[in-house]
Image 1 (cartoon, rainbow, N blue to C red):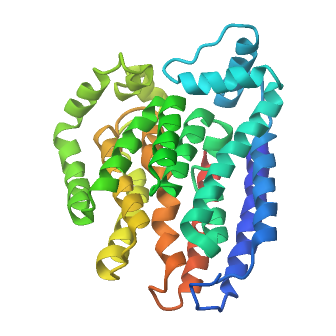
Image 2 (cartoon, one colour):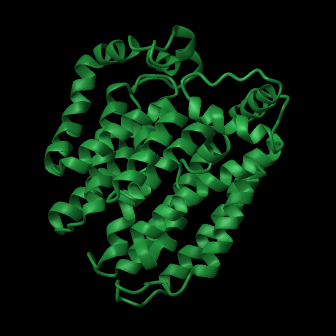
Length: 356
């Protein structure tokens, strides 16, 4: 059994324990913690996550993302940095090379990545932050973007930090600029967040998302050509134009499984906002931003590394699904449904990684 499978057997056990724990929650007063005082257990979980991500093994003999980050760190130490458009991330790595090894750098980076999420959860969910943090940690993308696609995950965590301070201009725009400076692709969700912050129209955005699917079917190649022609902006845009070899190696094409996965928070959010009349400023921004960023992915869904474009919306997946349930009473037996969401998300993540 490889290290990844051992890790996921471990976290599935934790998910089961925490899921069963939530089944016993009986406090219906959502102005207080529905799961009691979780400060100690949340701190333990936070530390465990940082250590698991930060100390995940690095194989210097194989070509995977984590290995490439280790080599990039070593090259930077020897005065050979190569950061592309992500200058701020490069500066962060350069400063770290002066005071630590690449092994410690992985731990520090995991700490910042997890801390930004933790702050967002506390600011967003208040006394019920633990459940939001728990579900986020065990979500489909969290682990892979903490140990492999580190730069994108690190940058996206600063967008979560920006959302945590969405009512304060200076920290909001500062965190957003840091995100874009660390990974230029974050300009797409940043634009989505900016639009959502100033224009709340979930019904219109949902219609645009629904239209984007047949629009892709009719003119998907046109959108890919337009976006890929902007390759001078960022070399990663070349992913939008897969070669014949790419199509042999990667699962390139219309990903109905990803579409189904992506639509769950969209329709749940619509139910919360329109059917259950949930009115919350932060949730409106989260929901509308998710839809807008997901539209971009649908229009370029045939690209290789399609999941990396999907992540530009998926990093908001968990709060869109569960945030309203942690703020107020919306459905009967709500605590039981929250437990099912935790267990269902854990099972999905577990089996997706067993499959990979």
